[in-house]
Image (cartoon, rainbow, N blue to C red; front, side, top):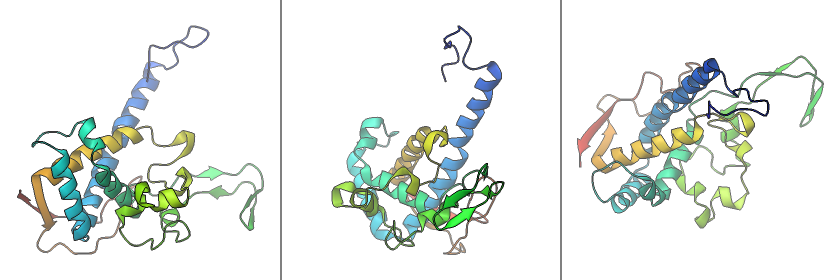
Length: 227
């Protein structure tokens, strides 16, 4: 955040209060969303055994021992990033973008929206658009594999078609931190444990709206066993 950095007139760019508020936002973005998204990733992998086994093989090959994954090891785990990214598409941690009030009449596709109307982008609808994501309801980490001609490479997918943590200049301030934190945590879980849904846990789970997050309704119970 460079709190000590000065602007052109010698004044601090951020006040102590602004530093505090941004730190809170940064930590929140890299903890609550990370926990929710990691839970959803484990859930989706239990329903997709081929992806589960492929991820285990990659993690075992990339991590030499039962240690915290470092940056070099994460770079050798592209499939892990794809699994997490696909989970974020299907079960995005946040509900939607912030509301915006139109200041002028605006043309949105075939519709004219008058000034004064509140508009909001529904992240879920964007992520389930079959024109962008073939078989959108399918958990398919390979769609993010550019080397294999995944959707990201074939269609020139841009950041506005993938919005789990927003996009543009006002995307989540903790976005990169959250991704790295989640990748490390997921790698450690895969390396150390096998898991299934716990006895009595429903196979289907809906998202629950707890602003600003969309966690699993009622939570998800897993049964873990050391590998």
